[in-house]
Length: 116
Image 1 (cartoon, one colour):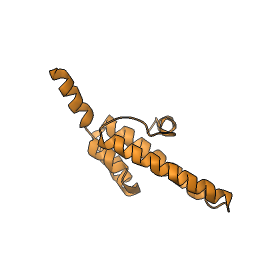
Image 2 (cartoon, rainbow, N blue to C red):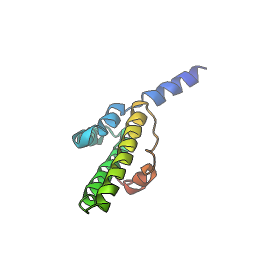
Image 3 (cartoon, rainbow, N blue to C red):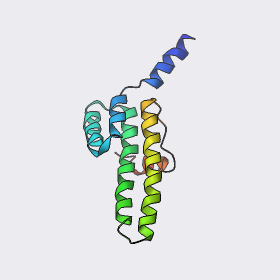
Image 4 (cartoon, rainbow, N blue to C red):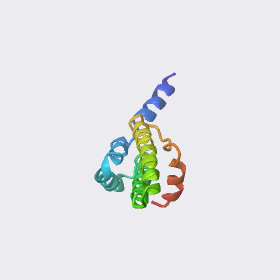
């Protein structure tokens, strides 16, 4: 019984949790989390930094798509709604201490930034 309580503590309060949460708070927060984690190398924080970086790249792609009249605007708005949903889920995972990928594109972000 004692082991499960210890394991629960490790999953709910992993090392690097602050950096992981900070990564989801604006692009500046992502940069600060990246720099902070560069010194300490927490796997939990690194995982969430990659997920957040994927969201930033997705946001930039959506901005470029929004330059296309009408169809681009529609794709941008739908993409923005999905991106906000993925951002909220990623933030919730970081706050809860879970190392889960964000819905829809999280596994792609892991592949894309595996060498980071």
